[in-house]
Image (cartoon, rainbow, N blue to C red):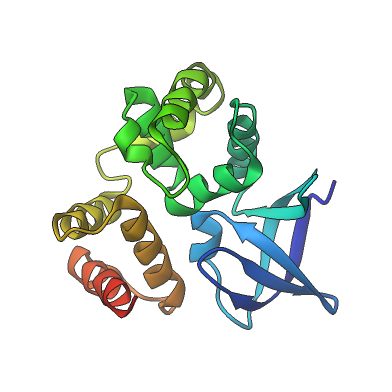
Length: 200
């Protein structure tokens, strides 16, 4: 298995990034956290999982080994394939997913391609595993200040009619496009995210 890749980010879109690794342009389907760290022209490292199926090869990228472990747990859920699992993790961070699973909140898992029945199955099958394998992340997700800015911005944008998926993607894009030393506030992150949504 290809455990990780290190290369220069040559391009990225809302669904994938391309890493130049020793002259090879490798397309990677990233999580929200990995996409948020993507800066064009700069070197980056990502943990990976290569899936081989009838549809061909697909390389999935993660910001940490924990993200990859969580992705592999998602793959164990019946009817959840690699593309759907990475879509869920591209729109929502792990803490958000864990909170939804623990509370059985299907609406929090609203992303393209994921219907209510599969969301319900994810909650049912993952809940006992989360409590055993991802207790630390679950506790962090439950912490009041863990994602306060993101939650504030998401609440504000959904109040304007945007979906949770659109909000998550806009927030991730805003952070990815900002300078490394930017100091976010609730207002500045809201304005940056709203600007991205309006351009789309």
